[in-house]
Length: 314
Image 1 (tube, rainbow, N blue to C red):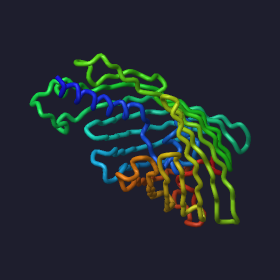
Image 2 (image 1 turned 120 degrees about the vertical axis):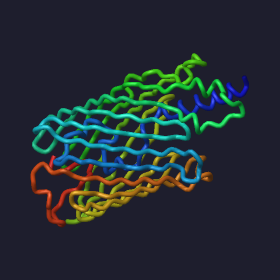
Image 3 (image 1 turned 135 degrees about the vertical axis):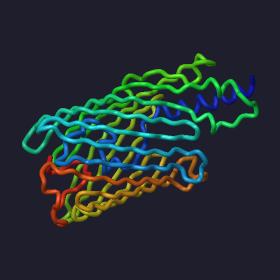
Image 4 (image 1 turned 90 degrees about the vertical axis):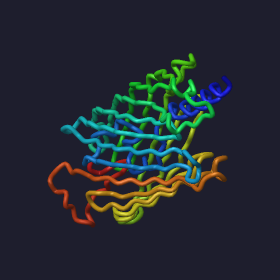
């Protein structure tokens, strides 16, 4: 009985950690659709992106995440998007997909306000073969059941030539789930996560742009997490960024715009209590930009950024 209780508590803690979190990533500086569904359709191109993140190198069973994202425009005022995600943390897995619809309103000649709504379907599961117990046929393991939940995300995004401001919410319904439905009456709530972000772009001379920005995450139990960022872009081709996540990590990012594609990498140096147990977090991403028109072969010196929190083409 003690063994069953111990395993049950471990799984509950593990599942609770995962279910309360939207996938953490550092590349939102280059892909703001990751934290706000209202971004869909606001660009002058349709980006298809993939990212891979391995967290806390050196710690066994640390989180690993993969994400596919795409969004595009419909006419001048609407956008569509989608995402496929997979997060693995030890023996637990969070995988699913979401679809997004956004509507854009021009608030002036150079600014627009966008509203986005997405519906998601997520499965939470446990790989029983990766759980080792001293008791063959442990009831706590045999009675594990996968959970499938649906939810809704919402966002508002105001953008112009030199600024962007957004607010978004994920897991708005805060649905309930229970891995141990057959052996426990404890119900787990998939907690809501809110984002507030904004930034401004400054031109330094003719070829350098500097973009300071900030992101605030509001999570369960009054947990507030703040990122302070600064991104430097040279000739719309090479980007370097630095991000400070309070009491968590210092992130170093770089990206190269190759015209219709972008490749980027980030390294998170931990500054939390886990710092001495791991060698940091690595994240890579690649994207491809589908243009509105057929002129995808843009000259190197005149091409547009694949990812930007704002775009003069908007």
